[in-house]
Length: 162
Image (cartoon, rainbow, N blue to C red; front, side, top):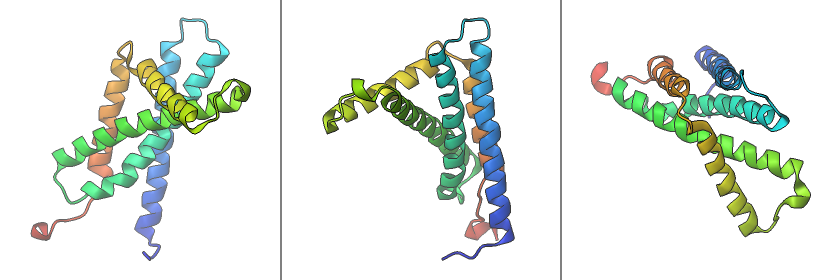
């Protein structure tokens, strides 16, 4: 088991702060998109889900970056981009699935196949809500996340760099 060191504690604090900032940024971008429209209760829940999904995706991206820590900058950047987009969609779909099943339990099919189909539906619905219409601000924030993680995230020196 790995010993708890000062760099581990600092890394955890940085990752938590990073996730908080990204979650608030994702939520803020969606609030800006809906600023001129009437905001109902469903829209408010969607905005919260986006914030939490962004924060969780940022944490997972930071944590999984250790697998690409010995690679060059371009590979770390592409890996972080891929993981963030994948985790954001997965967490968004999962949180939407949980919200709908917790809010409307009597309207759900609780069989295994029913829950599987509902989870697929929620995943695809979340992705369509996020990517249609295209939101350039989310693309820019995704690139910013990947750049930040590639530059400041977990890195290890290769044997030939020593």
